Image 1 (cartoon, rainbow over the protein chains, first blue to last red):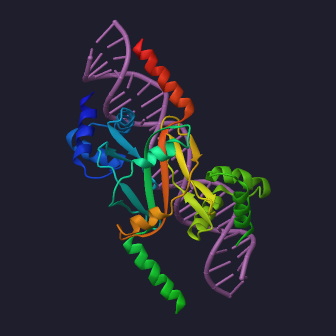
Image 2 (image 1 turned 90 degrees about the vertical axis):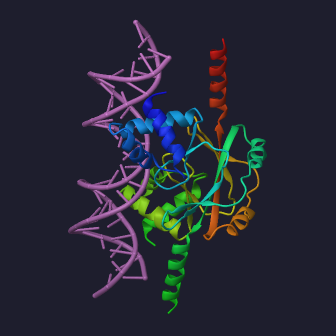
Image 3 (image 1 turned 135 degrees about the horizontal axis):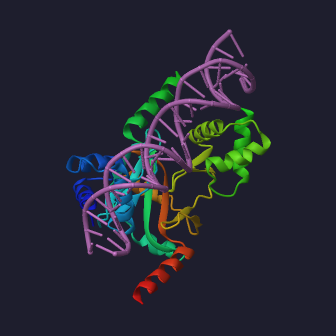
Length: 134
Length: 134
DNA sequence: ATGATTGCAAAGTGTTTGCACTAAT
DNA sequence: ATTAGTGCAAACACTTTGCAATCAT
C-alpha cells in the first residue's frame, strides 16, 4: 500500500460520483504532483481487483470508478449526448439470485443502465420533429 | 440506402450474437472487398440512430451490435477474462416503466449486465485459494 | 443538380506496457 | 534482499474525421 494508492483511494472517497480515470488523476495530482497517469490506471485496476473500488462500465467512451459502497444504485444514459445520471429507486439484489440459477457463472454483481433521451435532448428532438412537420 | 449499408444490415441479420465492428467488417468485406472500416463504423452509427440495430455497450473494450429484434435478453460478463455470454430467463420490459417515473429522461430501453466469474475463471480462482491455504 | 455516402489515410481518445529506478516489507 | 510499485514515454486498440471522389435520388 503505497502513498500513491492511499491518496487515490482517499480522493475517490471524497468524490461524489463515478469519476473517470483522468478526473481522478487531476485530483490526485494536486497532492502528488509527480504521479503519472499510468500509475493511476494501474492502481485503479489493482483496487478494483481487491474489491476496494468498483470499476463501472456503463457505456460511453471511458470507464468510471466508485468506492465500493453499499448505497448501490442504477444509471440512465442519454443515447443522444452521452450524459449519465443516477436514477432514484431501489436497488434490486434479488436480480442476482434470479439469474444465478440460469447461468453457470458465479454471479457477484450486476449493472442496470437505462437508456433514453435526457431532458435537453428530448426537447431538441421534439423541436426537430415539429420542424419536419411544417 | 447504399449497397454498403444493405450488406452490413444483411450480414448483421445472419450473425447470431453481438458482433463487434471489426467482426462485421470482416464478414462484409467478403462481399464488398473495397469497403472501408470507416464506412462500417459510420453505417453502424446511422443504423443504430434509426433504430434498425442496437448498439450495445456492455463493458469490455469494444462496442457490439445486434439487429433490433424483440428477442431481447440479458448478458453476463466475466470480470476476470472479459468473456461475455447470454443469460437465459425472461426480459423485463416493466423495468423501464418503473424507472420512468423516477427520472426526467424519456426512457427508451435498458441493459442489464450481470458480472461474475465464468466457469473457467471460477475454477482457476478456487485453485488459487487452495494454493494459498496450503 | 444536390446532398448523402464512400474509400483512404491521418488523427484522436482512452488505456496499457517496457524499462530502469525507487520504495515497501 | 526481494518483491511490488513508480514515472516516463512509447505503443496499443478502437473509433472518428477531413477530404476529394462517387453514388443515390
